[in-house]
Length: 109
Image (tube, rainbow, N blue to C red; front, side, top):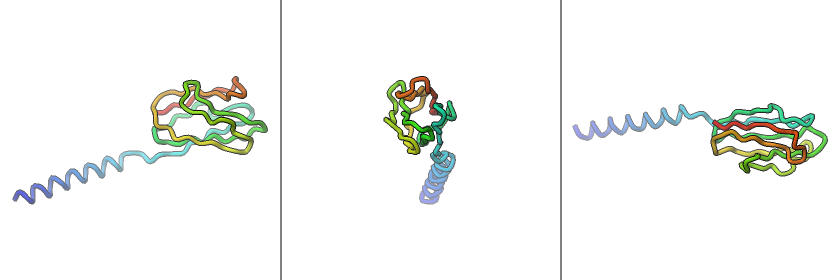
């Protein structure tokens, strides 16, 4: 009888853990295009664990640099890209340090 209760208990726990794993969304990849001296989209909302890829489609180099120090692409040359996987929640305003009028927002939920 005790063995049957133990088996049932373990089965319930394993099932619950399996459901929790299934409910957790898989990490996604989001793209920000740099073109015409703008980040597009200007605001991107992602989940923790997601990856953001900045692709420079402009004719000149750019950066994607968090104003709070959370990330810094350094220079992204034309037709090149840079990626980061975000681990921390929050709103991260960022800028192109080479062209400070280029600003955008990364929201991590």
